[in-house]
Image 1 (cartoon, rainbow, N blue to C red):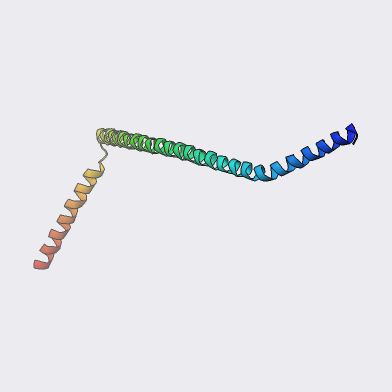
Image 2 (tube, rainbow, N blue to C red; image 1 turned 120 degrees about the vertical axis):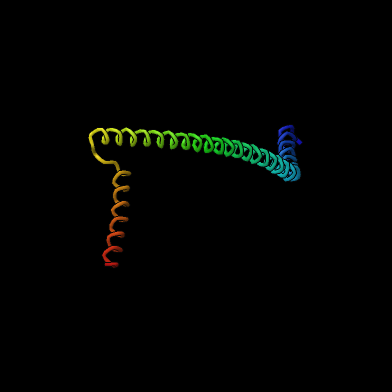
Length: 124
């Protein structure tokens, strides 16, 4: 056999050897890659879950802070409203204009007086 034929035969046999080895080892290599990918996926899920839990904790803290601020604002607005009402009532009183309490008191007295007059009218 000539040297070229021997070399060509060796190349052919090497190719067959690669093909055979890839067929046997390729499946196990593929399975190893799948297993490695599963591990990466699990670690990724754990990391994402950890980050989601941390974000949820921060959101809960933020909600509490917002609620606290909202309560404080409502209390302050209530104080401002009462102070405003008091000053308006005081100004109206200085001008001689009756307050709502004065009108309600007079209305209650008129109701009593009306009831008393009806009673007197019935007894006569």
